[in-house]
Image 1 (cartoon, rainbow, N blue to C red):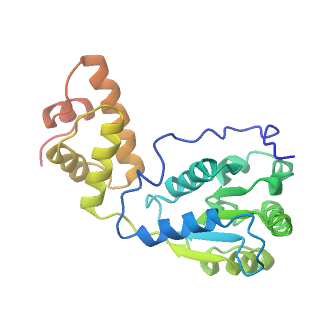
Image 2: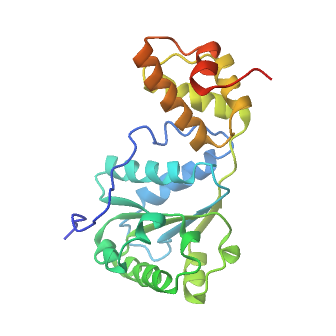
Length: 241
């Protein structure tokens, strides 16, 4: 039975984190491989890998890509679930029971369980069940498999079995385009100059930049003002350098 109703945590995906909104030419090949990986789920060929490990520094868009994978699976009429290890650590490992019945399972930030043997064993067991069902498991971490520092060698071995790709950081031009795209999806007009101002005055991590855009969006609606550099300075309390 493909049912995730037993999960006691939120599995709602951000509606703006899709492959379309992931604007990175440098990581284009990663996106292509992820799409193919999902499309091949349920293909009865033993040569097809069942797992895909993505790694990269914080803020490069790994969570965005997992959300995009789950959304893409839904487009293909496949069941999917996307879970964060940060949330899972607050729950019993029993929350993983039955997930192997889902076509595409996405687990974010596996490095967070590096010191938790119980959760490492649980995810190792899930991997084996997914393998038996010929479904797909996507996992992200902040380091390569061998650098994760997992205390369960069997889990390290399992993560090394499948596909592995590193997600590279977006360059400044890509971040500006991504900010303007996110703004446009909110019905906002964000100029190149305003987006560049945000990039140069705030943390360059996309998560923080998007959070700042959310603040500006709310303030723009409240005050009925366009998002200009003076408006950004006023709302975010920024000064010219």
